Amino acid sequence: MQTDRFNDPVAFRDFLDAKLAGAPPDFTLHDALAQWELENQADRGESLAAVRRGFESLEAGKTVDAFEFVERMRRKIRPLPPR
Image (cartoon, rainbow, N blue to C red; front, side):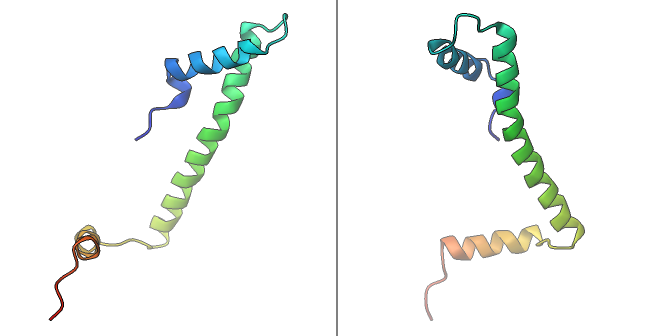
């Protein structure tokens, strides 16, 4: 799973460096934190939407048995030789 960007100090440092490079003189830490949160809400929103779609599929019965799925993937990756 990807690291949560919102809690990644390296990502925040990179974000802050980019913002400070072209920031007006009155740019504050409050401004930076507000923009950081705003940009990362979109990422979280997309993740939450994907999780919701997954639950909706589960509730609708759109599931596949795990053993069946593994067998299909095995055949797809390494097909059986022709007879």
